[in-house]
Length: 163
Image 1 (cartoon, rainbow, N blue to C red):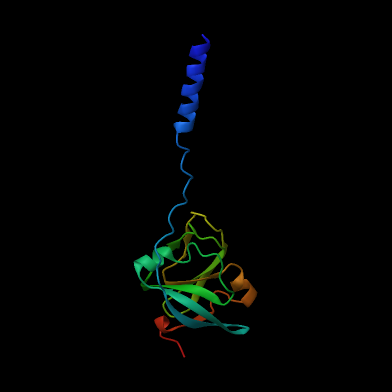
Image 2 (cartoon, rainbow, N blue to C red):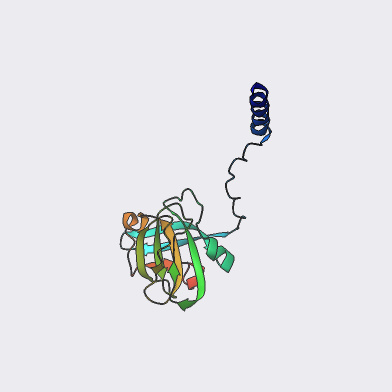
């Protein structure tokens, strides 16, 4: 009986020792890099000009990526999405880590609507409300802080009104 117990103990020890430890969980690979052309624009507000350094989202790939996975965004930084044709648009905040203000812009550069402080990581859709040509995403709360309102004009080459 003692011999059987000893053999079982040895077999158990080898069984446990011989089993490899589970591999550590790996985080998903980072998404492939998407490059964006840089530009600048001006928003004419009642309080004066607000200048922004922006990245341009012109291609479907760039527009799908947008500001996803970004850890921060400066007060006078943003991303300008140009859809060329005027259309009703919907955005969401999936994989977007920071709150954003979304400025929906008509073909002539007029801000038609502002959605303030979009919730990070939300998959709830945010609609333009009416057909627009472009969307400017800026830091959440920046529109209010800088006095940017619907009816203000965005000046940039895509609207044909840059100076």
